[in-house]
Structures are given as C-alpha cells and as structure tokens.
Image (tube, rainbow, N blue to C red; front, side, top):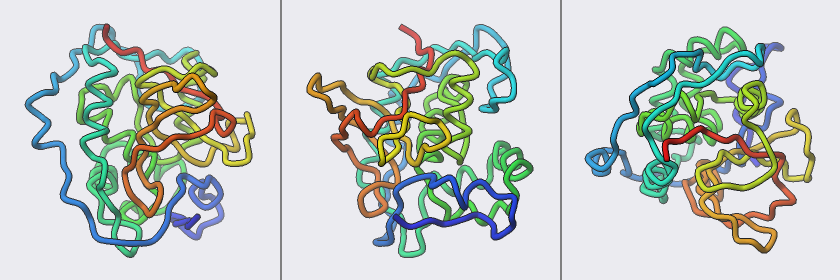
Length: 229
C-alpha cells in the first residue's frame, strides 16, 4: 500500500490515516461524468443544515436531496477503469478536490497545500466527487480523510453495521471496528448475503476505480446517505 502524505509537517492526518489502498501505475483513463450527466438529476435541498463532513458536533444534520442510491451508484460505476498515473495522481477526483472549497477547509485542519492533493490517496476524493456530481454531496459528504468522513456520519447518527446499496463503506484491513483504524472507503453496490459485499471503489487494485468483492469482516462500518426514494 503506497502512502502519499500531503505534507511532511507534524500536524498532518494524511500521513497516518492510510486514506486508501494506493499503488503506483498506468495512465489516466478518460472517464468523466460528461456522458452520464444527462441522466443525473441534480438534488434540490429541502432542509438547510450544515453539510460539512466535520465530526465536532452531533447536532449537525444533513440536507435532504432528490437523488437516489441508484443514481449515485450508476455514476460511480461509469468511472470504473479510471486509473491514476505513475505519480499516483492525474485523476479527475484529485483535480476537482484540490480546487474545491472543501480543500481549503481540510487544509486548515490537516496542513499542507492544495497541490499536494493532486498526488494524494484518492479513495475518499472519489466518493466525494461522485456525491458532488450527482447533487448528493450534502448526503454523501466530502473529505479527503476517511476517518473524518466516517466520523461525520457517526456524528449525524447515520453510521451502522448493515450493508445497503449506496451506503459508504469504510474498511480496516485488519478487521478493526474502530473508526480511527479506517484505511479505505468506497460505495456498497450489493450485499451478497454470503459474508461479502460488492463495492465500487476508487484508488484500489493498481490505483484504479474498480468493482470489488470484499469480506464484511474487513468493514468498520457504513455511512448511510439519506437518499430520495
């Protein structure tokens, strides 16, 4: 597992968070949301509450949006095959996140610079990008650190142990059930009812977006976006 800390400074979560299972290799795939955009209906907030994935207050709620789990999964699946470059970057997810408002907030929390996101582990950025490009960001959240992302769901009482399609799944390869031990994140596509789940993940395998089958024994927990329908 390659680690790409965003900063060498002592106060940096990326260095010890093991954000994703990253590996070196290959050129960027040309997958984008453009071809799929016509099939995605942007979400329309119904309730305005704080949508930032911070965990310092359990009172923070989520914005209800008119986006379904199937829409989110369809966009995630359309990205399968997208590959990072030899430096561990070059994906549209890293590029989008580095230029986002959220990057300024997480840099204030974690240290580093925007450019360092361009080659940083990107599993959480992929999840965040899918949320943004389906209009479901207030439900999916946005962060580059898997632990903070999971804590946001927990703080909003939307974190549990049951796999559901469209849920955000957080992994610990050693089977820990402690949020602080989370190493990787993706989407649940299907509960296979045999102790495994089918997922869609960014920054997995050889630094790609892939469908995977994972044992639930490696799951710390699931974040549940409050999708429409």
